[in-house]
Length: 370
Image (cartoon, rainbow, N blue to C red; front, side):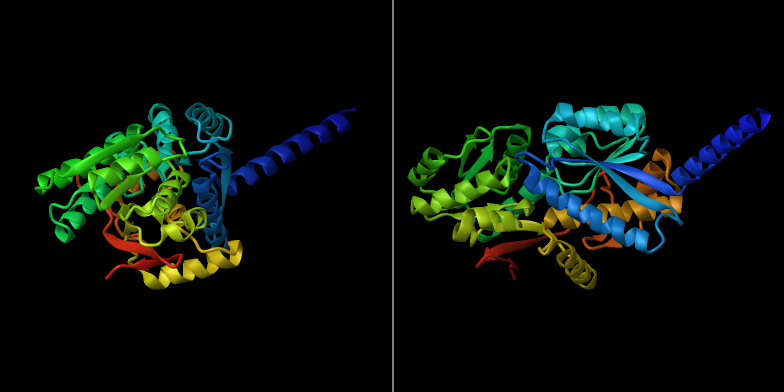
């Protein structure tokens, strides 16, 4: 009997050792993305970029010999589901950091991230509101919509001084903020010849808005919609109504889904986009991404891939706890990725400054404007 008890205890100790060793051999982080629902057009490429980065990191030795794993949760674009997923990842899976997406979800999670002391990294949402709260455990690795709107205003005024422009935007916090940023910047540059057209998120018929734009005489327009479906509807209906207008937008316009949804109506849109600083690295990344996914990587996939590569480098240098990652992100200054050297804003807040360039869609292809 004693022998049986001894063997049982020995097995329990061995199991506990193996289990503990298994956990020590793995570094787990979380990702909360809209993998289903209206935001899946953002969430799926984000996951593809993350998966590719994890493959490469593990193939090259992981995090100082430990494998990197990502636990994915589907927010469905719902803030309440996102918060619930965050609590599951932090309380049950014990992750030190979470990759997030979408403005409403990120802003809902941010107070919990700060309260629990878990790093939250925004990989796709462009709302300027995120920058305002990126001070503790939230880091924003996306060029925010305000910066892109101001850059667009400057470009527009330099090329088309004092021309009338219509600003069509979703009537939500992000859309209003970006539209106001564009309007304020253009007005400060001396052009107050602006028509504002807001729309409720989720609508598909923009003909009333577009007819008002036609009657205003505006030959230019700036779009900040809630998703790519809305952008595509605006572009298609502009063509269907035979309205001659040059549309401007921001980086999310670089998407094959937009090209597929809008068809030829996507051609000609001009949008801001982060400058690719390392063309060799970018080309290599695109080749690997295409080999794995049979598709070209777009903005969101590039950004999530680079975010994971950055986090891996931080964890190798500083450690894998939330405080280690927070410290590393605040101090690392020698990470050179696809979008250039990682550099936090000089405002004291935790968001990146990136150099922007201008691109357009031509025959369904993304082209840099000279």
